[in-house]
Image 1 (cartoon, rainbow, N blue to C red):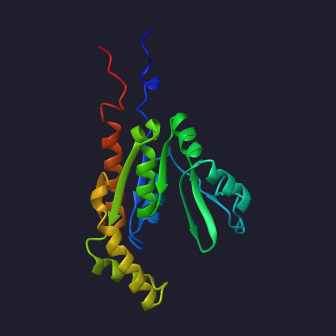
Image 2: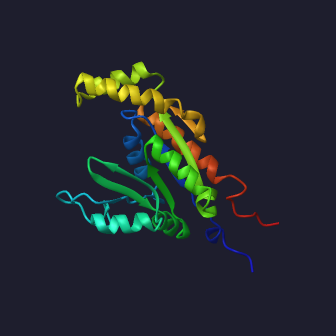
Length: 211
């Protein structure tokens, strides 16, 4: 029986975007989600209290410290970190569940988290097959400094500390599948969409043509 074109779908992607602080990865991720209806973000787990308007299972999965620790000890997280006394993590089941539903999944993580996810994916064939990593960076640290100062959110000492970390992060760009040197927002979006489109056409992910 011949399959209809609609029943033939490419294998889903796990798209990981990382960047130094201030490079614009959160903005890029928001634009990708708006531009790609089939793309869904991975929902992070956290032990912090919900902020006004946040909903469990929509904005975050909110866990008690005990629940989070239990999951951590069971090896349920593909990546986790502690920030300002609160724990954050991404469940392997969260990613696998959405991929098995045929959804493309978007991950917004820092460089350290990206390294952990790459390593963890080596032991999970489904994640390894789906994973595509993109590093977004300004053309230079000088440009990044200008952006951080223009944003006006941090004191000079904080900016210099961010830049010191950024230098170390930018040095990791060769560990990613793709490098996007940031221009304007629309150009960054166009390049990211080109990456996704290219990955969708890989023969390993494409449905076989009728012969």
